[in-house]
Length: 401
Image (cartoon, rainbow, N blue to C red; front, top):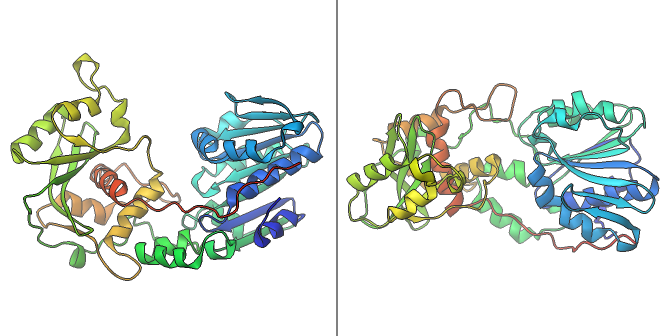
């Protein structure tokens, strides 16, 4: 395997449980698939799992790489629908999602990789998978980028006998040039950069949009008469939208729309009433492709398009973490520059940015207060225009033969 020095150090460590905290593009997936292959190839009839926060993530992140790494002569059968590979020695590698931890119960396991463990519910390990390793004395690799000081942080700091902890920055991983790290430092806010690239456990003190500052972020925002960019959340109570201008890399929120007990047709009518004869681009929740909230089975997407709006929407949801980070990065970058401003009349936007927090003891945004609707609308807009950059590893996967 073409492992980097940090990857090799982790790979060659003999501890039963290893906790790896690493920056983006360290090569976590490549290392994980190498670990899975080693266990499956060296232990006959082994049961080996790769677990991601969601089943879809497991498929998108690891499935193609796993098939590339394993030499075809070692494969007995590949099951595309179940995301599993059975080797000629009787061992099976399976990909799983952790959306419902209880669904992972019942199997004896020889080895597990928990990828992006910070994004999983703690019981995935403590109440379910730990017991699955006991009868076979199986091992586990926890690997991922930090997300505040949550259960992943606790494992990393409290490693005891049979445990080993590792921490590597993106630069130390050796797959991303220093020039790209410097560019990311300029693009991102300080806390996001430290967390995502320096693998630091940043304490966010509960506030989600920590870079919003009423003194610096709230300013009179004039309508320049050009294209309007509108982020939209489809919660029915209320329907929420932020209206912005976008010039020179800066977003200015000039208006907000909040309609209780409403639907997509009504918010379309409200936009046209407020802004007749304007060029408008809508950035909605990606779920608009499927949601049918009107008579005749029309989707939210078709309603917006038939109203004459240009619609820019992702194929699937960006992770909540990346969407939040994209907004924080616009609010203030590491070099103290601000690229997102809110007009004082947008009181719900201001209140939502100031007050939404994470649920106590978790890394999940609190949705009970109602502040999430306007923040989601803003997030869909910002994330489409200024997504968190995904870097690319330099090394290409090589087969295990």
